[in-house]
Length: 185
Image 1: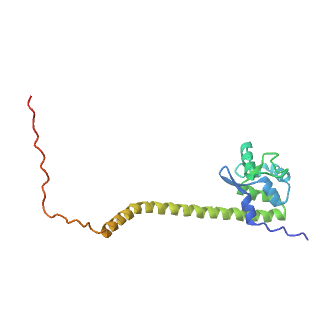
Image 2: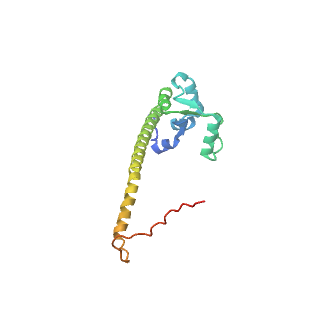
Image 3: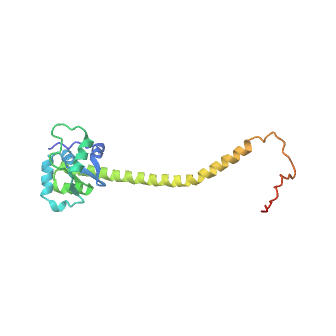
């Protein structure tokens, strides 16, 4: 009887999911490590089944993207630099890997990865919904700001004691303006 595959922690998978070209993807080497195979063997299995991996399931990084990714990882240990431009797999590509890699571990890894992708999508939807609600509240509050300032001004006027100078009552005529004179030449 074989040993059951070790349980994967969702946090371990979440850390391996990257955002590249606006898509959530996983690197071939991270997937290979999760599946317990070498990266070159994973890529060979994919190359033997090119019709299962269209461009929206898997793509190869450009040299610039790989370089940026290398800097994100910081200082890598010997042998961890990219010898070849890595391939990345979208959620659909990871699901398709289960049909190419046929081991019990691959099935368990795929199930865990799919659950993590779904949870991330739900979390993102929740954050998007919260962001919309906050923006709506800000719009409502902007109108209230002027009303609140007016209210505070009125309260200030009511709470400020009247001046101690006696007010004059009655009609007062100000100095009359001087009549306009036309000069003769």
